[in-house]
Figure 1 (cartoon, one colour):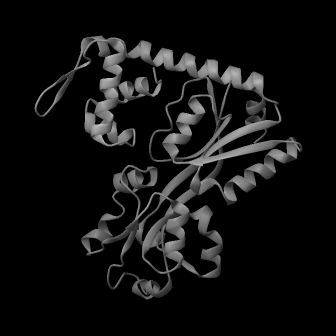
Figure 2 (cartoon, one colour):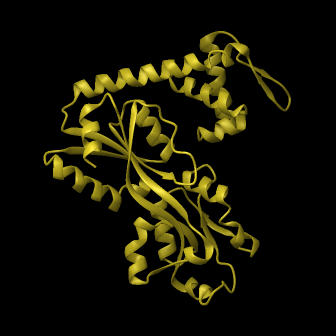
Figure 3 (cartoon, rainbow, N blue to C red):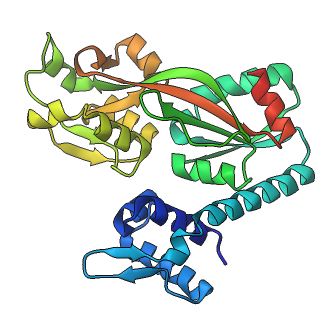
Length: 291
């Protein structure tokens, strides 16, 4: 059985909705429904009562939620132990978001090399949820990702060590021919937006804080939507629209005047750049302790 089916079941148990669980797992609702049916085929009994506009979770599913969590945790720990024992301690895998794979990772790597000059790192870049999944499945020794300071941290248990590597801020920035719109204290008109999908980490943060609402109420529209932050930054640099970028990614552009920050007038989202390692992975834990 594909272990991801148990992860799907947990998402469904927590969300109580096929559509919300599908969005959380970054798949379409029909695809998610097929995966739940695959789990039912493996178990041999229905796990849902499907109605016209709703679903009811079976007792056999809800009453085994704790056991499903325990099984996934044991599998992740076993896989991590096998991987850790089968690799050299000087060769580690680090999973991180695309937005952290440039300057922030370079600074972290320099810090690692101070204490471990011979360290070799395999960098895996992907969206935040996939990074977390890779780490929890033991396929990455270290996890480097964003956490918004105003919201709860990632709900890891005591077996995962967490360190804040850096502070950062998600800020609205604009460039090129659009800069004139924000001369003075207020915008004279609303520029087009470079947006993030609502299923992406930054997209959810912006939606939850409502910081795009003033732009939308003034008639702004989304010209381009992308979950690839480096691509969003390049579009902003070329004057395509206004967008939200981590300050660590655009500090040189801000210093040179190529980009203009609108954080003072339109708000910002404080971020932590957090580093994680499992307590049973001693080489990775040693690196985290040195940060």
